[in-house]
Amino acid sequence: MKIAVDAMGGDYAPEEIVKGAVEAARENRQSRGIILVGVQERVREELEKYNTDGLPITICHASEIVEMNDPPAVAVKKKRDSSISVAADLVRNGEASALVTAGNTGAAVAATVLKWRMLSKVDRPAIATVFPAPAGYTLLLDVGANVSCKPLHLLQYSIMGKVYAEHVMGIRDPKVGLLSVGEESTKGNVFTKEAYRNLQNIPGINFVGNVEGKDIFSNTVDVVVTDGFVGNVVLKLSEGVASALQEMLKSEIEKAIINKVGALLMMSAFKNLKKKADYDEHGGAPLLGVNGVCIICHGRSSAKAIKNAINVAEGYVINNVNEHIEDEIRTFLA
Image 1: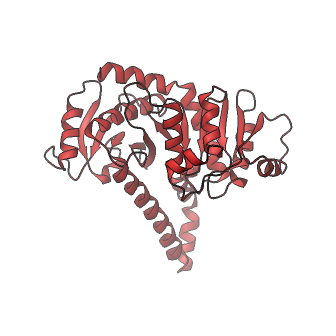
Image 2: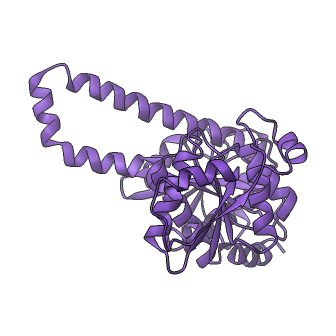
Image 3: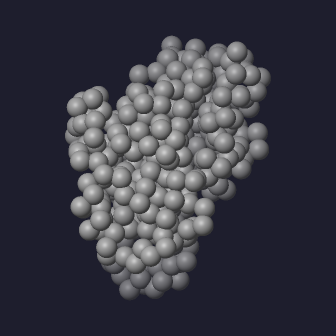
């Protein structure tokens, strides 16, 4: 299996991207090959910092870079030799099994949709990400691929989320909820009310009804579906709250000696909590619905995040997620 990695995408590219790819290759050099896609001279310069003897890493030259502020359509149509575009071509042509990028999310979505097309009977893609909960994780989708949804799209998201939760997260018969402003079926706008009625009528989905934002973190539900606008706001708000709490906790600990002593005694718990909530540990978010495998990482991804994203991509391929999505979409939305 070969994974195409966008070496020029992300705030810390290519340094952290190359480092993460090297770590991933060292972790599993027997069955995993990595293709670093980017400006050859810069990528090679980074690779030379490491001992890569025997590692299954190659470089695929791409002369252009999609910047974070580039409009997605322009990035794909005008920068056809960009690292994200060339990486998508490698997957389309069968030279790689998956793509990993920490670059411009819009460009990644546009490139994969245009070059790979959608899975059968799937209209729009969705980015799915995990949120920590006391007894595991909750999968939320969409968090930014499609900001303007129709109720039918949420129905498709629920099936895709169910499949990912079952086959990758190992959750049997996952509970699916619709994000709204109240638990009652009468709550919400016209959009969510129609989506609710649609979800009620699909026997293959363990639909538990409306859920509120707090339920994402409470193990009330396994999969939460919403449109990409709301989902992205939830994601960014959660990141902001987590960062603010960390800074406030650090400030309080430094105020008194007794607080510092208590913090030392709680260090193990703090580390475990940070690990569970840290996006670096989860690597990246799968772009569900496209006819290929694309893992989208945070723009500030470290080498650790890139290494784990490569692991996520490999798991997606091994578990045949796209095949299962098509099977279930065909069964329940025929």
